[in-house]
Image (cartoon, rainbow, N blue to C red; front, side):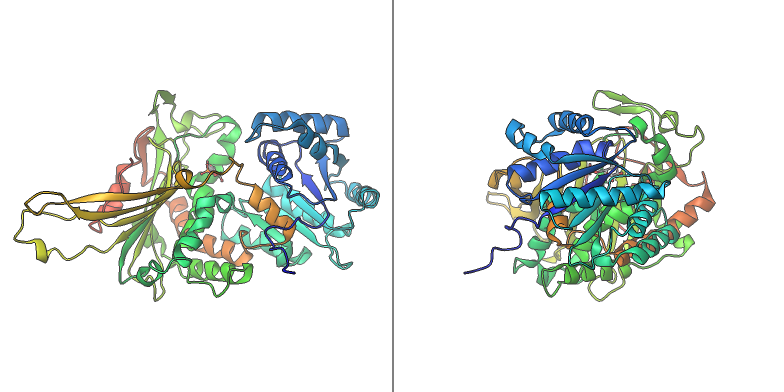
Length: 505
Ligand code: BG6
């Protein structure tokens, strides 16, 4: 009899312990994702959700609050029976890292609960908390003996970006966690890897015979990675964002995930070690720039009053909890190069920003221009560009742009597009984007999670930009109108190399 594949099997029995259970991440994403897994029969048969809640929160109150969140954020109609079954296993526990005995009490309660449900000792600790709490919670869990895997049970720690705020703090956090647990026990989530189209980059590149032979500096002119958002900085995000900025918020994590997938070497195996090693290697090969080079190869901008569609967006500096003289960038464009045999000489242009005219996430691979000589004596005056576009949001799909002859007696050439859209081929239920990630944490597959060396390689590549900008202060910070395509300097950055950004559709 053949073994069921890893991806079809139900995870082992386990406790799913959530720190920060009263927060937004739990209500908006984790519980709706657990619900979707339950609806697909992909939760363990023996399972419990333990919410580490504020002092005095009863199990009933917690269940009520999670049910309310589920009704609000579920991605499909909620079936009462499935929701009841899921929430019935929710327990509320108190634990505060400032009060170490509370972790000893937590361990005792957890063991009792696991014994009563026949769960065994597998535990997943999901730290849905601000990042400053990661190390203190992990320290207490370890001290109270909840992270050791000695008895054969697995113990996993799930954390979500940001992993540090620069190279030094990322190293410190990794160092701290790795004193308490082994690397294989840490699941660092970058939610971009939960997106189907992002996962599909590997398949597109390595499950098709035609791309890999031309996926290199002989055939590719450059790549553009764009993550444009229409939303400005809103809600309670002002102080976080003002201390963070577009570069830290998006580049070493989300944009570098895209970059590493399109630029990595083919891994020998589709497994976590091989894939994560290939990703870490390519990130480590990003050329470290001097601060002068970093200034020359970057543009940062901040949005000012404007309109996105019909919505008026105020000046970034007038956002709640943002300093009125803030020099934090809400837009960044960078030029990077990767110093290896595959990519030497091929620029990677990255851009991302808030309050832009159109929401769009894509990787555009620009192939080298065909020689024009053959058409010199024809009416053709130019060839349009050959792009392969991996569209991630809002349309999920792949587009190939190529030249074709316009029907008629004379030689006329025009650029056309061949488009594949996910939704035309596959009928997938809408998801939160966390289902695969959470399921993989439970089955112990780290392939979609960031390893410490990748995180550090990402920070290493952006550190010169952070340093150079912090010294430059307001000097060099450009402005752009909300609803526009970003600061004009971004066009100059790429035009300097005789290239242009792909226009917003
Ligand atoms: C988050 C950033 O990690 O990603 C946000 O902190 C950003 O600022 C978000 O808006 C973008 O994610 P998505 O999935 O909407 O592209």
